[in-house]
Image (tube, rainbow, N blue to C red):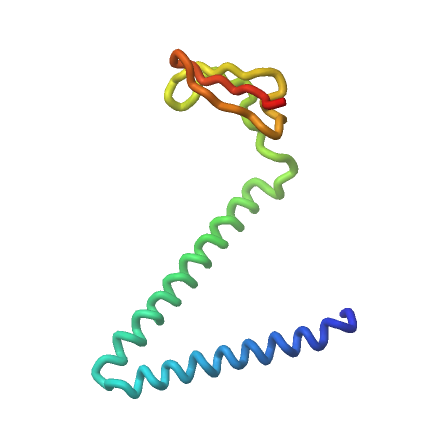
Length: 119
């Protein structure tokens, strides 16, 4: 651990504790306001917290299952490099270097989409 990690960690812990104190104090004011309305106001965040936790756990479990079936990713998935048309069926006209250029101008003329490299 570096020498500067101590004071920074301490400040974060104090800030986190202060945030929890303020959060708890806000709930005290909510619960004092009207005893008949505090239950729905407490149940909605509780249900949301349970739902988010459950969905996150399911997503993590899904990703772990993929990892177990396929193993670690070793390469980037290959993308098709020969493009003939766009999603609307218009033919594509690519100038040399359009795939790696920093600035490309896209225009549509006569039902054909043109990709031109800016100089």
